[in-house]
Length: 151
Image 1 (cartoon, helix red, strand yellow):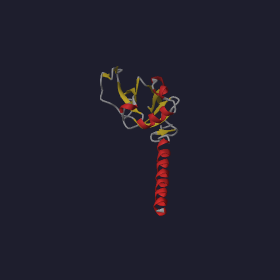
Image 2 (cartoon, rainbow, N blue to C red):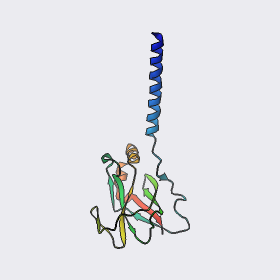
Image 3 (cartoon, helix red, strand yellow):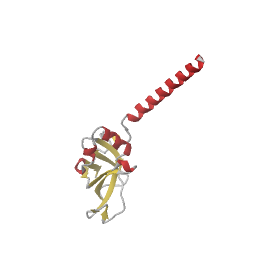
Image 4 (cartoon, rainbow, N blue to C red):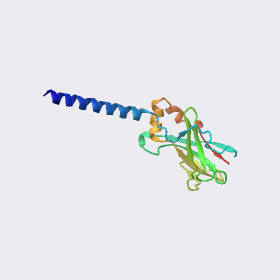
C-alpha cells in the first residue's frame, strides 16, 4: 500500500512541475516578429514613415483582428521589401511590404490617389500579452502606429 502512495505522490509532483513549466513558458512575452529595428531597413537608402489611418484591436474575435491600415504609394514601397511596424510605447515589429488590391474604398476609408491601403497585423497572442501589461489603450490609438520603409 505504501508503494502505491509513493507512486501517486511522485506522479502528482511530476504533473505539477510539468504544469508550472508550461504556465511559465506561456506567460513569457511572445518574441515572434518583434525586433529592435536596427539593421532591418537598409541604412544607405532614405526611409519614409507613414502613420496609420485606422486601427482595429479586437483580439477576442480571434486571429487577424489586430491591425493598422496604412496608405502606401505604389511606386515607393516594393512588395516583399522589409518594413518596420512601430507602435509607440509598445515596440517595433519587423514585417514585409504587402498590398491589397487597388480599391477606391477600403474598410470605410477613401484610398488616396496613387496609393493602396494595406493592413499590418500584430499577432493576437502578442496583443493579449500587451493587454496584460496595461497597454491596450495605447494599441487602440492610430497615432501610435507607423510603418517605415526604404524608398
